[in-house]
Length: 388
Ligand SMILES: *Cc1c(COP(=O)(O)O)cnc(C)c1O
Image (cartoon, rainbow, N blue to C red):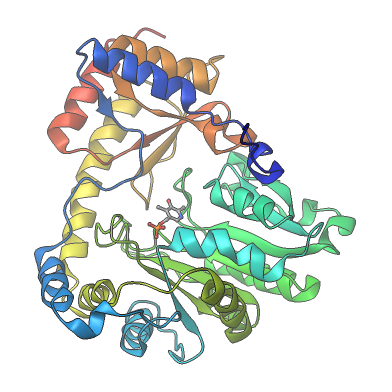
């Protein structure tokens, strides 16, 4: 029997990292010491007090049964308290917060709750691919909003045609941004609130990187803007903040009807997050936040190393104020894929080609600062040997 995949899988854009994965495997087989500055997965371990809480909570039989789909009230309360402490916003844990199996899960599922086949989702490009793919899986039509350097990598909402806006249901945003590392101001968010209210569009703000910042001025939540709760569902993740990518926990918060819609999908698809993991997340959010400050110091030192090198070599980029990524223009005339594959071939250093995040990422590459300083220095020394 020939197993045919459904059109929703077959229609997916080509996997642009396949060639790099192949070359990486080829070099590794030859014994080349590969340094990956490719993936956005923190190299540092989860703080030990969080692990201890999991160990303890996993022994409690009450945690061995199905959790509630929306998350334990104590988890949602801890998330609300964390949001109040960090952003000075008030969320009702009863109906304005839902737990997620990592924020990716919620982002992928949210179009199923609000987008009918043929309706439009406004998706940034370059971007985290899940906005686009979640839309396609729901039968929606992604409308690409280019994030251009001259606009500070913010979408130009005025450029979206009226006939698109009448069909648009969701707008995805992500600040601080992966892959560009750009930030957004409250003033921009405020414009988006007006825009969304006017056109009846739900703003889905991916806030995965609000805690990875290097300024005195921490990145805002979209929900800080007056009126935001009318239009916004914000996705928070513990993955990058507490080095918990493997644990799979996050939450969505904001407009209660939006929270209920996403919850309605989830209750029919998954059965929530293992309660011991929720308890560990409560520990992460409620305890002393010094480990997060330490994490920021570590990424900042790496950022400075990478940026000093890039500056010295004459690359064009902005010094990131947040995220653990540096978004850099490829040397004159070189396409993203060619540049990255040449660097890998000559040095064993893996970079991410910008076009892997969409067509408007072409002409850029992304450096991920998720290796220790020694490895990063080694990677930069190797990059120094490449002629372009
Ligand atoms: C890492 C990342 C996420 C996913 O985080 P999880 O909570 O681990 O699912 C979401 N959005 C962006 C932009 C990311 O880079």
